[in-house]
Figure 1: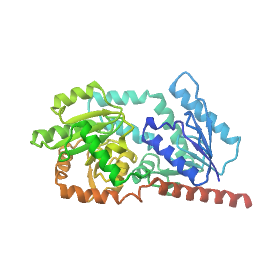
Figure 2: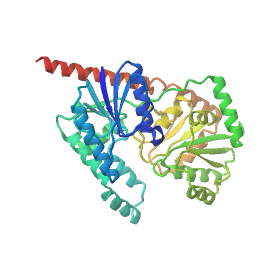
Figure 3: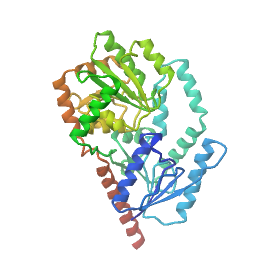
Figure 4: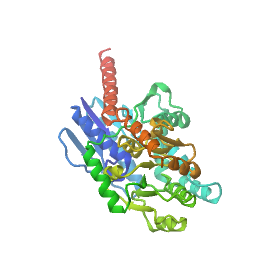
Length: 392
């Protein structure tokens, strides 16, 4: 089968959506798909994948994205594919899979970060004049409103709800194929070695409860809310909890906030790291009090690594959390009292161990191999439907 995948970027350092797309394509190649990638990135060559690097050269970010989309549309018309699968908004495709969720929801949830008043008004003003978001929302609206438009693949029920609420996409055009991650292939011995080495590196004892927070966009992913919850635990006299915050949002502003909250001694900013999988082994809990995530990779990765997770209902990954059995869900990312309470509950080693064992059991439900199989089944349906139309 000959498949074209369209994504403006596929660089893992950009975030979870790009990492997921790259892993997904590796699984397509392993399944024997002849894969043609249309992108502005320059990924390393791989057998079975043909990379079409499409320049978006222009004077502005918006024009670069527009130019990329238009050039890809022309290239797709010049060659025949069994299926065209777009991650980036693009017309003339068979499948559109908004891994980052809808632009409309992204805008709405970014506004939710701001409390009512001048800050929210200023953000609304900035969004109104954000030309790239206006362009992406316009092309998204065209894709969803076209009755003959592509099938839309949603990576969670949360994204399904976005499609219906913002654009009224009918059920027959939506396929829910839950997000996936590659499970770790490390042994029990490797995990124990990582745990000991990383805890020693950061000065943590084996008796201390280590809470992880992994994010790139600190504001949107609720890092401040975790810091406030950590400060509340300190005020309550909890002395055995430590935290590592991993990601590229680190800056002096956050260090000053930690000092002001009185948690600089118990919370460490790691910065970006290529050792996240190893850091999971050193932790006991992952907190992800995000304001918006279509289906966060970090929660899925942490769970298959055996970490109970605290996520929010604004994260599609919370679908696999059974509150009280393998983690907890916050209704409000700003509810720092509830966040602190759930972490405090998991100080009980027996409770935490039971949650950890249950968390690992989601591995089959959240595997990228399963995700890819379900997508390939959709590819086959599209190809059979097209062949049937040609024969009539």
